[in-house]
Structures are given as structure tokens and as C-alpha cells.
Image (cartoon, rainbow, N blue to C red; front, top):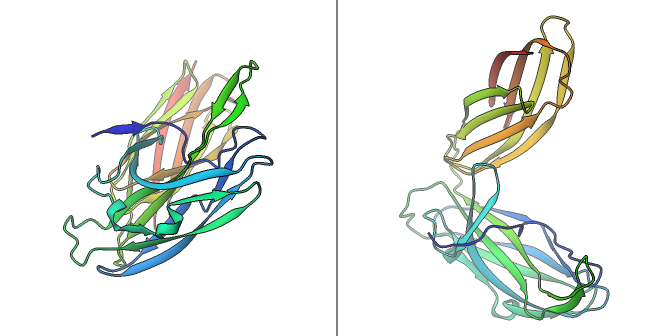
Amino acid sequence: MNKITLFFLFLIIQISAQTGISVSPPRVYFESAAGSSNTQKITVTNVSAENTLDLAVSLGDWDYDEEGGNNMYAAGTLKNSCASWINIKKNDNYFSLAPGERKELEVTLTSPTVNQDKLSAHTAVLFVSQMNPVDDVDKKGAKIKVSIRSGIKIFHRTPEVVKRKIEIQDLKFDSSKKLLNITFENQSDIWTDGKIITDIINTNTGKKITIDPIVFYTLPRNIRKISIPVEDLKDKGSYNVSVMIDYGDNETLEMGELNFNYE
């Protein structure tokens, strides 16, 4: 695979007060049967106070790494790519925005009549890239040229009901770093998002440590490794950890427990 970018493209990016673009929404979801077309709108805004931006639209592929970071690839690289199904109006492929100006892009996705790969979920990414770099300065005051690219994740699924399933594969506590390390897999045929809820109880004193929920995103068959800091762990003793992965209604919960001694 030709991995072309490994950075931060799915943020609303504003490098400085001089130049920046925002895209909304950052994620677009399509649901359609084979051979059907759907159109959704994306708003691009030039948040610069001074500079007119010349912008170009392009498509690519993406997936997650085990830590939840974004990997970028050329369009059509991944087997679950729907980049070739997406159409942008010719006049929207290249456009300019004055300071504060915004533009709506119509994104049309037409799924093929025959789904050759038999997958229930497909993805792509739509890039909005600045073509006219502007002058700026870095933190040290050196003159630089700034060019911005922002990306919108695109998801497509078929209308059929797909059962979601997350399974915890490993749960360990690293006492030297005060980290609870969890590994789980999305065993669904569809993307599955949710949150990890963690409670830690000192079984000697009954004192409870509550960890802020951690939000996660996965694609089908993703394995995710997450390290959860336990900064409030101070007292020595025996502990019980309860981890709940909530990724839907009450029937779609995954639970895990771990006992450990903190010396």
C-alpha cells in the first residue's frame, strides 16, 4: 500500500490568525442500496481575516492504526474504498473563497449495482486543499509559507441490519506507569463507535477511583489498543478494575474485570 500521509487532516485546522479553513461536518454518512445515489452537502469556510484562498477538492482512502490514529492512502488503495463512487460537481473541484466566505459542496455517492467485494461498509476521504500558500511566521519568528489541507471522512453502508460486536482481548495493569492497557477488536461488519467506562475499587478500603470515559472509533475488524492513565492511584493495596465498553443500546455492552495489587 502507498501510505501518503500520517498526520492531522481530520481537524478543523487554523494554523494562525492569518489563514485557515473549516469544514463541516467532519464526517458524512451515506446509507443506500446497490445502484442508488445519495447527495449530501459539506460547508467550507475561509476563516482567514485577510487572505483569499484558492482551494481544490480531491479524494483518498483512510483507515485507523491500532492507537486510533489516521492513516492516509491514495484513492482506490484499500479494498473497502468507495472513493470511485463519489462525484463532485465540476465547478466545485476548484474554487476561491474570500475572507469569511463560505461555500457548500454537493457530494454525491452512487453505489455500484453489483457489490463485488460483498462488504457492508465502505469509506473514503474528501480533501479540501489550499493551492496558494500564504506568508506567515513560525514560533521563532522565521518567515514561512503556510498551505492548509483539511479532510472529511466519508462512510457508506448498506441498509441491511448488521449486528455490532466488540470483544475485549486483553486487559492488563502496568503498575510502574499507572496505565490500564486494554486491547479489543471490532468484530462487526460495520464501523462501531462508543466509549470506555472504567471504575477502580480498592478492595481493602472500598475507595473508588472513577476514570473519565474515553471515546473511541473503529472500522470493521479493527484491533484497538488503548492505554488509560490511572493518575489518582496512590494507596497501596488490592484493586478491582471494571471496564465497560458501551457501543450502542443496553444489549451492546462488553464487560471486563481485572484484579491487581499495587505495591
